[in-house]
Length: 158
Image (cartoon, rainbow, N blue to C red; front, side, top):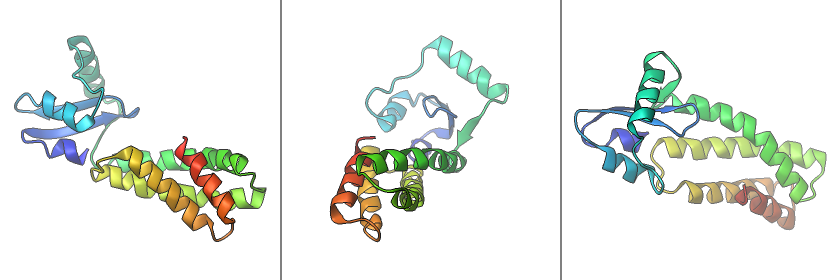
């Protein structure tokens, strides 16, 4: 969102709850610059979708602006961390105690990644890989080197 808002001419950008649709208010055509920021596969919506999404915003559906997305990200980390911890624990053959210790680490590292994304991280996939490595490093307090590596590889595959 920070990178969208930094585009010359953009007055405001918002994203829907799914993270798939963006509304950008501007005094000029910024669609090419917006697509560059959003990356591969991004394209302007057709007229029908634009009308539908604009109507959604006007009727008060959730469209988040910069800063508000962190609230959604916090919820997302809370929901995803237990799932990722369970999968990583299974992949690394961890016991229940180690799995339980892994979950808050994953949640905290995900929040760091989401904060970086909010600030305009360039490569989210690399950020995910770095997050997995940070989880592995922190989990060395209670896992051996092989288990920690298995946890990192499991997270990287997600």
